[in-house]
Each structure stands twice: as C-alpha cells, then as structure tokens.
Image (tube, rainbow, N blue to C red; front, side, top):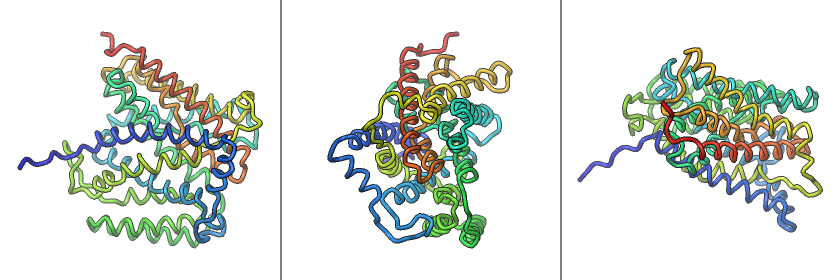
Length: 399
C-alpha cells in the first residue's frame, strides 16, 4: 500500500485562503444586498443583536449574535493567525533575518503610509482620529482569492511574498488592537489571564504535547481576557504562541508537530465558515437615504484612499527602495508591474479593517457605517485595480 504523501501547510494554506477569499466576497455582497432589501434589512439587523447567551461581562451586557461572532469566533480566526505567525518565524519563510527583511519593511511601510493618508484626509479631526488604523490592515483571504482568479499570470513568488507581508501585517494589527483599542482594564481578570498564560508556558517548556489541554486553557484565557477589557481576540494569538511546534526543515507539514496539526484542522473552518460569517455579519450597511456623495465625507474617503493609495505607495515604495539600495531584492520572477499589482491587492483590507473599525468607534453606528462604506469602496477599487494590472502584466520578468 502506497503511503499517502504529507500535506504541505503552505500549499493547503494558499488553497484554502484562495477559496475562502472567493466565499468571503460572496458573503460580503450578500450582506450588502440583504441590508438594503425591504423586508429583509430589518430582520438582518435585528438578528445580529438578538440576545443569545448569558452576560459574561457587565461591560458588554448579554451576549448577542454579533458579540459571539466578533469576540468569540474571531478569537479562533486570530488563533489561526497566531499559529501562522509562529510557524513562519520558527519553521518557515521568516525563520531568518535575511528572509524577514523585505516583508517586515514592506509591511511596516504598508501600515504607516495608509495611516498617514487617513489622518491627512480627515484633517486631524479629534472625533475621527481613532480610525487611523482602519486602512492599515490587509485581508489575506480576499487578496489571495483575487490572485487565485489570475492563475499563472501571478508568479508563485508574488503569492508567497504577499502572504508573508500579510502575516507580518497581521502581527502589527494584533499589536494595534491590544495597545490602541483597550480602554478600561479589570486588573483582577487580567491577573487571572496572566496565571493561565503562565500555566500554558510551563506546559510548553515541559514539552507537554497534548493539544486538548492547551485548548482548554485557551478557552479560560479567552474568558478572562474578555472580562479584563482587553479585546478577547488577543487571547487567540497568545494561545497560539504557547502551542508546541516541532521544527521540521524540509517537511513543515509534519504530523508530529501539535502546531501544524491544529493549523491543518482549523484552516477549513476559518476559511469556509468563520471569515465568511464575519463578513456577512459586518459588511451589511444600509444605504437608504445615502447618495454617492457620502464617499466624499472625511471618514469614508480617508479609509478608502488609505487603502487604495496608501497601501500601494507604502509597499511598492519600500520594495523599490530596498531593491535599489541593496537592502533586499524583490521577489524572483516578479517585474515591477507585478510588484505594483501586488501592492494594489494589499489595499484589500476587508476583514481586519472592518474589525478595527468596530473597535475604533464603539457604540457609534453612524461612524461604523461610514467605516464600512470606506472599507468596501477602498477594498473593491484595490481589488479591481490590482486584478487589472496583474492581468495585463507580462508573464515573465523582462531580462
């Protein structure tokens, strides 16, 4: 009997992200349709706020469908993000500084420039400053989904580079959420969360490989973080960092590694269920009474231009400077047109941008809706522009 070849974590990741990205696009479109259809729009918005559970935290009140999705299911999404980050740093393309240089510089520039564009467009308005990080994030599922539609016209090295930049970008977004969007802190709950984290660390150092105990402690960590006032999704990333990983050079899909096993198990659920569900629950915005002129309001315009112009300027500019100065070379097989197209696709900030938008303006439905309009406009324009550039780009880099 022939042994089944091991699955590649990277190949499976790209495949699931591509298909999940297409599903996410469909979920977002459906949400916009339902939110604007008479008879369905009221049902849509009502269902999101239906109490469906106990009051876990006095700060949030009874758990609703929206809370379970944004604070519960998205913690699993961030758990997968954390697993991907750890795998890449320990056993992947970010394992050495030589390979980290260009993605790190590009990701940092790709977050800083959009934020500056946003602040410039909003004119420093105090009531809008909290949204500076909204256009700073890249939606890897959406971007990889667009790349998948291009087939062989997008060089493999370009897909790997975009994935790596997005992973580093996710690290920055997690840090921003933890530091920039945490208001009041419950010290007792945070202390209990720290004790759970210490227990996980001791288990890791003791080489305990059983996944169930880490997941059980991860659930307790989520609860205490949720009570503390720090956004509960951070618990997903922290839990991922405590999951043991077995470095396997040349075979990163090893079944002996708890981290790789968990990553393989979570990928289809996150790509095909959690992210599309989040998109459906958060992309819906009623346009009743609105006109195209709403896009010219400071908040949606700042978000849209931050994604469309800021991302491409930050990433393309950083890659060009790094290549010209000898700091790092651009991805092999990719022309400058390819780099430009990829930089445009990085302006698709859908999932993470919507998520940060909700944190930036809590309780302000009007501003959250304006964020959604800006994110949708900027992401769609970035996707269409990036697709067009890469579709017309030469298949091979000119020599």
